[in-house]
Image (cartoon, rainbow, N blue to C red; front, top):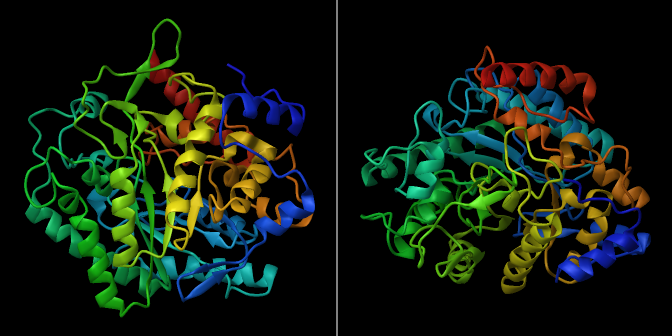
Length: 475
């Protein structure tokens, strides 16, 4: 189903004014360049050289021991030369059993040097291209994949809708409080290794249904890590306090936070659209959801928690929503679903507006906590115009790009030099990258993910092989 058929910014503006409240645009190129080129102070330790970020985009291309692979190096070399001053290093597991797939990055005692070499290369390339790295920030995203861990799922609590989507048996025991206490120390060990490798910023990944994110919605969980908001944020508080103590406040603490879960969706067999699984109300699960209407957000607890995170020491927040495993349209409004998935159940502009509404409300509630906005890729060449407007209105401090960075890693250079993106290179949200991330029928247990349409020489053959493997499984 084709939605993006706009021939000009005026056409998109007219549609956005009819369908949305917050999708608006800066049209003047010089003003746009000025806004996207603004410096952004992050705490007392760094000032970003511009207001653009590359989100943590997983390549699923490590070796089986978690070391960065050849394609990992290639991706970050491209990002380093791309001009964004916030390069958010992708999800890196702190334990082997916390990986989401067999080729997710995994930082451990045996490969710190490999990460140090990659980080050094990123810094060298960036400095050679732009003259300095003093205004560059590279947080490494520390993660445990929880319910989506490979090969064994580790759950925080039972949500019957998510259990159904993930084939999680009702008899499976959630991770215990004692195991969570041990995991806190594993995060600290991961942070120590990151520091040893040269990273001076870490991100606690609290989004997309992974373990720390699931804990925030564990309202029905018993014990010290469930039930009350104080308990559901206990793990995060403990890790932050331990990090601050370990590094005497010298490690910058960031967080990518999922701020609205919604509910799982499935394919309607007739329309092929996504439809929500039947849910009860009041909805007793999830995070950032309105219990009387879990298809809409309620940010009351989210705001309370962000206030705590800020007080505890978080200095940079990356705002995300949804879960790619069970409602991908929420987090990533798309033009075409990945093969085998559902069509958009709403116009993508509505999804973009949801992103802007939530991140805008949160940024305006906490104006002194810089936040990175998400949800821009579907706007294609007009993402810059929308981002500039949100920055101008104080509805976000930093414009983040995810999928588009795979197809167009130097988007920030063009944004600042030309005030416009190259239509031939910009992501069209056809979700080939997502398709590749879901393909496991590979000799190493996972196909690497990238952009087959716009990085064709490298990922075209990979896509062909993955599609053949997928279709052979469907027979």
